[in-house]
Every structure is written in C-alpha cells, then in structure tokens.
Image (cartoon, rainbow, N blue to C red; front, side, top):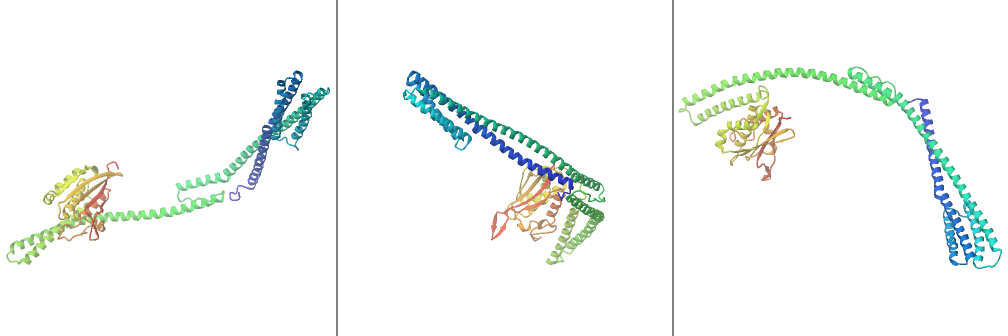
Length: 505
C-alpha cells in the first residue's frame, strides 16, 4: 500500500474491509460446520432413533397381542407373535444403543427406563405363559403394559423434541450461513469498488497521462516526457521512457549525420565509379593499340629476320608475341568484369536450358576436341540477363573440360528447386579441387596450377561469382570427397553449385 501511495483513508478502508471479510469468512466456516453437525445429528442419529423406538413399540404391541391370543386359545401358534416380538425388541434395543442411546445420555436413560418396564412386564407375561393360576396376573400385566406404553410414549416424545431442537438449530445455521454469505458478497463488492476506484485514481489515470505524453513525444521526438504522479513504479517508468527518448534522439541525430555522410560518400563513390568506368574504357582502348603495334612489329621482325635469328632469338620473339596476346585477353577480361552490373539490361524471363545451349555452342570446338560427354536435366525459367548467365555456364563447363586430367570429361548439369530458389550444379570427373582452396578459387587472378600446365587468366570463376551475386544468388564449391591417397583427402569429382531466385520469389 505504501508503494502504491493510494492514500491514508483509502488504505484504512481497505484494511477494515479486509478484516471484516476475514471475520465473515471465519464465521461462515463456523456456520457451515454447525450446519453440517446439525444436519448429521438429525439425519444420522435422531431420525434413525425414532424409527428404532417405533420399531420397539410395535414389537411390544406384538408381544402383548400374542400373549393375549395364547391365553384365550391355548394354542401355541398364537404365541408366535410374542416370540417374534421379543426378538424384534432385542434388535431395536441394540439399534438404539448403536445410535448413541448409551448410559449417561438422555436417550440412554430413557432407554434404560423402557427396558426396566419391559423386564417387569415380561416377567408377568412369562408367569402367565407358564400357566400360573394367580388371578391377579391379568390385572398386573395390564397395569405393567400400560406403564410400559406410557414410558415408550415418553421416549418417543423426548426423541421428537430433540429432533425439533436440532431442526431449529439446522434452520438457524442455514439462515446464519446465508446472512454470512450475503455479507461476504457485499464486502467483496465494496472491496472491489474501493480497489477499482483507487486503481483508477492512482494507477489508471497516471498511466493514461503517461501514454498521452508518450504519444505526443512520438509525434515530436524532441518533446520532453514529464515524470508525472502516481506510484513510484510509474514515476520510474516515465523516467526510463524519457531516458530512452533521449537515447533515441541522440541516435537519430547520429543516424542523420551518418546518413548525410553516407550520401556524401555515395555521391563521391558514384563519381569515382563513373571515373573508373571511363578510365577502364579509355585504358582498354589505349592499351590495346600499343599492344597491337608491339605484336605486329614483333611478327614483322620474326618474318624479316627469321633466317638471321638463332633458336633462342626466335624463342624470345614468341615469348613477346604470346605476352602481348595474353595482355590483350587480360584487358578484355578485365573490361568485361568491370561491366557486370553496370552496362547490362533489365531482367527478363530467361530459359536456362536455352542459355546452356548457347554456352555449349560457344564451346563446340573445345567439346569436340576433348570428346566431353555432357548430360543435363530439365532446366527452369528464371529472371535475369541471358548473356550474363551464358557466361556463367560457359566458364564452369570450360573449366570442367580444361581440368579434365587423363580421362574423358563427363559433365552433368542439373537444377533443383527449394526455399524459393533454384540450385544449379555442374559436376565433372576432372582432377578435383581440394577443400582448402574452396574460397581462393573465386578470387580474381588466383590460380592453383602453373600457366604452362593450364592456360587462362584466372578470372573466370571470379566473373561467375560476380554475375551470380548480381542476380541475387550465391555460388560455391561442393567439397564432398570419397577417396584418400597417401593420407591426403582428394575429391573424386568437382561440383560447382550456384543459386538463382525462382520466378515467384
């Protein structure tokens, strides 16, 4: 209560309500116990005692009727009610004892008196059954039985009175319990109302005020959020929200400065890229011209002075010509690499099967010379630029043929769909690539073998990666290996895989 600061009077009222509610609950429990006890006494004791008392009364009447019939007729068959009545009386007395009519209790004393009267009458009755000629027995029997009947009537009246007392007790307990339950309901309602009013005044209203300030600060991030009133927790919450607002303001200012700096760097980068692209075009054209001149003049020297040069001189000239040619190829490859993503057209629907056909057509002479066997699965349609995707398939298949080893190249091109993208795979049975070089081979100009063994500029896989990433995919080398030679893991096949988004993605 002190933490919530609901107020002194509200606190006192709630405490009083709580104490009264606890007292009502205790009284309710006591009343419920009394109700249960009264009901148990009426149902489980008094009523069964009355039934047994009535059974005892009927048994004694049967005995008196049987005695009278036997005396009038002298036949044993008329004595049977007497004998049955004695047995029933014994059972009724035992039942009363079991129900609580034991010595020391009111019911026990009544039962003892009834039993003494029964014994007195039965002694007279036994004399009459034995054939006694005492003329006073009939009168004595009548007097004793009337006395017994009066005593049993008194027993029944006492039991009925006890039942009425317990019924009244049961009724009072039920009434008291109803009153207590009503009081508990009223106290609960009052306590709920007090708590609701206190919650609304000290919790809900400050929360609504804080929410309003937060909404205003949302519209104007520079607006300060006051601490306000209410519980200590709400004050601390308002302070935390204000601290968060200050941090957000600081971060927004920092982001604004970073955005301005990023815009500036972007403009500078765009200018730099434009300058680099222009430089690439100029450099390629300017470098191609002197290379062609070098190649032409070296070839002229070779033709004019062929007979005058020794074997080493001719070799030097061949080196110069080969170097100039490789430089020309390298310049063209670099120019093509720099153009990816810049001078390309819009993405359209591309049949990758047709793209593969174009790549195989470009490699027709190489395939025919190597005897390569190329198989394929059905290839899908994707969004992209056909010319660039042709370069990807052409470079991967060209590498598979180039690094074929001593066996006839067996190349398989396949594609499977999953997770909103197509996965393409180009698998060959060539010399393989060790897993440690899986990333290095995609770096521009990186070579794993001498140029004399496997010619090339080392730009093909870098070009393939740039094109695939430009299309929103990724490319990698599957490094599954199955063989082991001299303790070193060697792949038994090479699989390059790359992904392209499916048309629906």
